[in-house]
Length: 229
Image: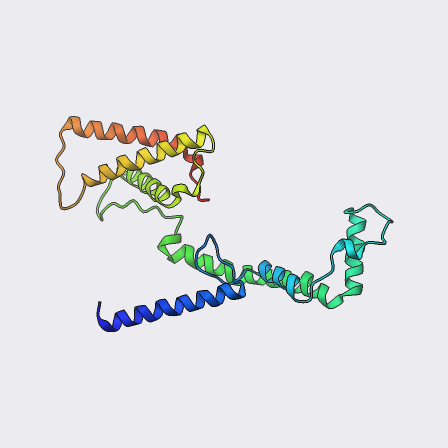
């Protein structure tokens, strides 16, 4: 790394650190202790409701109302009528503008953003399976093995302890099957490096294929436990 690139990297880190401090100070949201992000529309609405032009609570508005039981359809209709009469601008802000803003933001920005991500970003192209095979011809049996095993390895590496795999015997068994398959798969891939041509006897090849079939069969039994938290 050159002195110039090192200086740019350090400057970028300092800028990110300062932005993070500002974001933390103003209460910008973040997901799972990850980077700060722009707030969702409903988060903006909650913030407005808590700090700017808040609406009174339903119970405060309905203290003298006894015509219908609490939380019935008629009761809620009366809540709406009173809030509109008492605070027309605040009601419009919270119950008209913010839902519209949420719809527009989702329909024309968030959905569009994710459509682009799902189409072009390899990290989010969930409809595509990366087999990890080198370019060239591969029979379906190899593509099935490599595609499934690579997905399982990716899943196990990502999830780790994000899930309580000791919650019950079914989860513990599922995690055991997945981790054993990944350990076997990593050993298996070591034998197929391009710079180390593999020569197997018939018995060795049969043994590897039987082990692969066994792991695939067990993985299919725990398939429904494999979803991202």
